[in-house]
Length: 407
Image 1 (cartoon, rainbow, N blue to C red):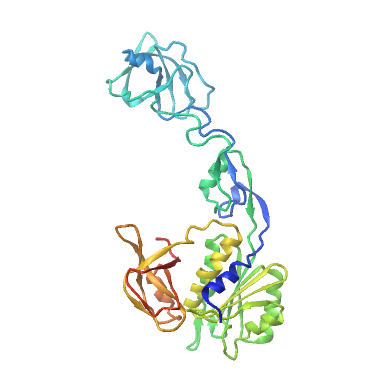
Image 2: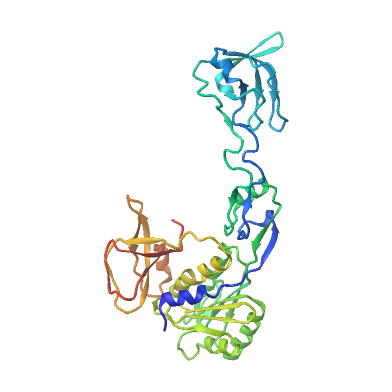
């Protein structure tokens, strides 16, 4: 039996080798970016007007001019106009390029317009409307310069990234090809969610939790179920191994008479890298690899064990395999109360997380009724990892935190 740190070292040393593919940006949301995206020109690419109003020459205002004849109109999307007479102004719209010889924009709300013999005249309502030279003009290159890094490789693409990609003219983008994942439950005691269980049965929950976790990560997955029959398990797993890249099993990995999965995986030439980990919940945890870039996680069937195993091992493994930037690698939280745990095992304590006045994360223990108490997860936000070399964990001590809920 190995430690949690040893198990993590083995898991993260056996990442899925993802291929890089190119996709249309319209379908890129949820994919992992596999190239840096650079600015193809300055941001903004010209001196951009940020208010509807008039563009003037600031020196004329400084010299006392408060009334400006409208010389021309500059709309967004028009080529750059020119203010020929700097005693006049250009009526201008948001998003337009700043006219030549004009450097300051005054918004409509600060102007009164009059018409005199077909001439449109703008008069400032008071001397306070011009705060400084260059107001309401977003200068070229003040956001980003041409060739500067806009999006770093490893980002999970959202609509915000797509907008920037479109802005720099990237209609296609390189992403990590995600693995095909099989979610596999096992056990004769399980029935599907739409069935009425007999007195000795329960509905499947682990497979649905795992499947929707994959969906949340935009990873395609299929669900399977294995009966407690060794030959059926062999036949089904042989097929699944041939068709899928990652197998995430729940149940059938302990020491029971019908826990055939580790034995069958060995018969199917899966290389076992470990089977038991010094942790609670989830001690009988099998991890292995097979030819063809196949990875197998076989988690114990108790709901909290499966859930904890996914968030401590499977999800971060998949993120690293896809080159995804992680933001929670050094997340820590302080215990809100003293907690005692006797066995010499690392303990994944369910906690409710809040923030104190100093901005530190505070973890309140939410103790359930064991690894079968799935409902207790509703009260918590994550797991605090308590080391196995201690019995007492004092209030205020900080330990690694794994979140399964956004705060």
